[in-house]
Structures are given as structure tokens and as C-alpha cells.
Amino acid sequence: MKRRQWNSVVQPLKKLKMSLTEFALFKALTIWHYKGGRQICTRQRDDIFRSLLIICEDEGHDDAVLRASEIVLAVGVVLTELHEMVTSYIEITVLDVLDDPILKDMLKFQY
Image (cartoon, rainbow, N blue to C red; front, side, top):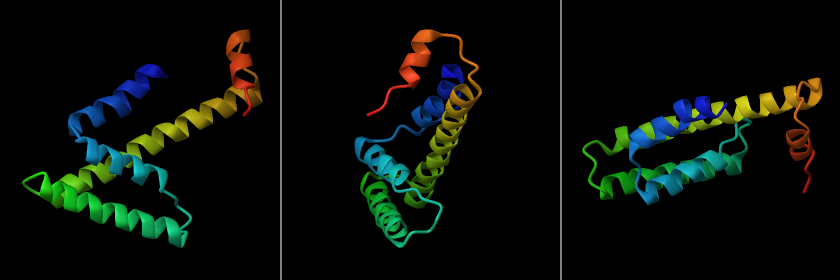
């Protein structure tokens, strides 16, 4: 799982070489992502994307729209990995396929 995360998430994000501001907006886009179409999420994403476009222009990227689009597309990479992690967690807990008692105890943790 760690190798898959490294290859499918860390490496692509590293290749983008995001500035701190771009990365903060990337994280905000990831947090506000919601497929149900809630108005507040849509409005927040639109505002964040507009801010990202402005930042990309201010940072002097040759094609600000292309740069912002690459960052937005990277959100899908993170969400795909998140889906994989949740699916794995469900399989481990529901099917009880885990033999490691320490990991079992960690998965039982609740806030």
C-alpha cells in the first residue's frame, strides 16, 4: 500500500513542484471536493480555483490556466488513493482478514 501511495500520489505531486500557496489551495480543493453538488461546496471550489488562477499568473507561469488545471487534476489522484484506503480499511475490518493484533487494535481506535 505504501509503495502504491508513493508511486500514484507522492511522485505525481512532486513533479508539479507546487509553491506553498499553490499547495495550500490544492489542499483546500481536496477538502471542499464533494460530488453531491452542494451549493456551498461548489461556491468554495469556484472561489479557490479563481484564487489559484490568480496565484499561477502572479507566480509567472507561462500558461496560468494550464498550471491551475494540472493542480486541479491532481486532486483526483489524491481522492482515488483515499478511496483505495477506505476500501482496504473496510475489507480489513468487515472481512476480518487481518492477523496482526497490534494493527487490529489500531483500527479499533475511536475519537
